[in-house]
Length: 40
Image 1 (cartoon, rainbow, N blue to C red):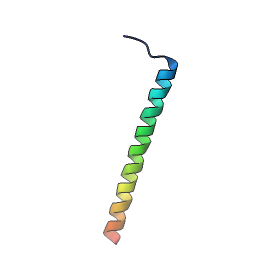
Image 2 (image 1 turned 90 degrees about the vertical axis):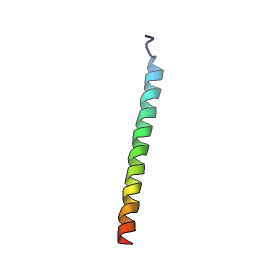
Image 3 (image 1 turned 120 degrees about the vertical axis):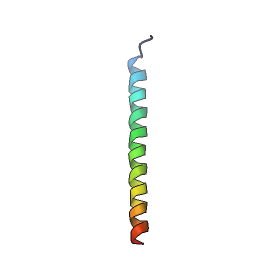
Image 4 (image 1 turned 180 degrees about the horizontal axis):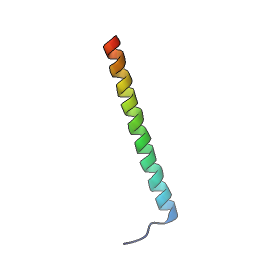
C-alpha cells in the first residue's frame, strides 16, 4: 500500500470536512423548511 503524501492527506481531510459541513447545512435547511411549512 502506497503512503499518501501530506498534501494528499490534507486535501482529503478538507474534502471530507467540506462534505460533512455541506451535509449539516442541508439537514439544517430541510429542518428549517419543515418547521416553517408546519407553522405556515
